[in-house]
Image: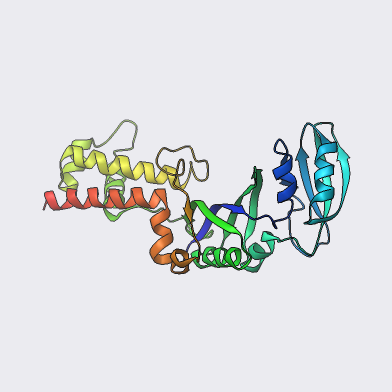
Length: 269
C-alpha cells in the first residue's frame, strides 16, 4: 500500500474565495501554513498579495462565500486576512480531512485553485474525486506520485536493475579505485557491456528520483509537463489500482524500463 502526493485543479463558483480571486486577478491568495484551512475552526487565515487591497476588499464584500473578513497584518503589498466562510461556501479542505489527508499547498490562478495534497492511499484520492463531484466541483488531476509508505526505505527498482546494482556493489565496481570494471560486471550478469551499463544507469536514475530528487520536479520525465486528467464521475479513479498508476509519468517510464530490462534478459538467455 502506497501513500500519494497529488496536485489537483479545482473549479467551482462556490469554492471559498473563488469569486474574489476571479474579480481581482492580480491577487495571489494562499492559506497561512501554520494555520491551514482545517474546517470547523470558525476562521481561516490567508496571506494575500495584491497591488490594490481596496479592490480586493470590495470583491470580498460581494463574495457570497465570505460572511466576514478582517485584515490582521498589513505589509503594504502583502497582508494576512482572517475570513469567516458563509454557509453557501464549499470547503474542499473538509474532504481532505475526511480521508485523513494533508493540504501541502494552495494557490489560485484565475478561477482555478491548485491544491497539492498528501493522502494515505490511492483509494483516498478516489474518494476526494467523489467528494468534488458530489459538491459540483470541477476536478482535474494534474500530477500524481505514489510513494512507498513513510516507514519504508525500499527503492522502486526492477529486478534486473536491483541485481545489476548489487552485483556491481559486491564486485567493487563503486570502489575508488575500482576493483571491477563494467566488463567484469557484465560478465558476472551474463549480459553485454552496453546492457550492463544501461541497467546500472537506469537503476541509478530510479534511486535518484526516489531519494535525492523526490518531490523536486527537476528530473526530466518524472513530474514535469504531465497531461491533465479530468473526471466527470470519478469512474477512472474509483478503481485506482488500474487507473491512477497509468497517470503517473514516473510509472509510465518505469514500464518502459521494465520492457528494456526484460529484452536484455531475453537476449542473453
